[in-house]
Image 1 (cartoon, rainbow, N blue to C red):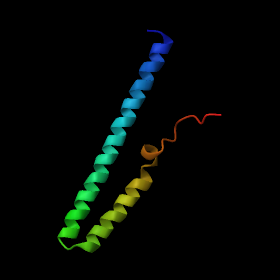
Image 2: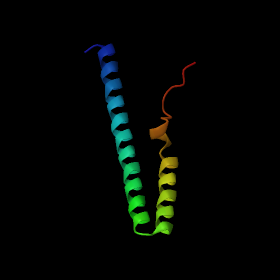
Image 3: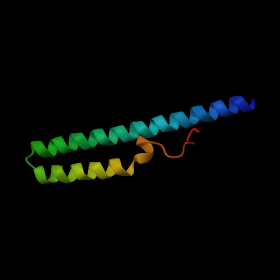
Amino acid sequence: MSDSDKGSAAEIDRLIAELEQAEAYEQKLRQFIVDVKDQLAAGNSERALSMLNEALRYIDNATDVVAPTDRAVPH
């Protein structure tokens, strides 16, 4: 396998891992939405608000999924 092929394979592996991470992130956010809707339907607005705050913390803590930070910046 040439260096170019190894580089391509590594890039594909990185992209697959990034997609899997993004998918898991999306699923977690969708679950937050479902859970908040359930709490609102049950009349638990305070709990729903708390869960929305938790979702915002999750979003804030997941910046590497939203905007990867380990990439080289083009010059």
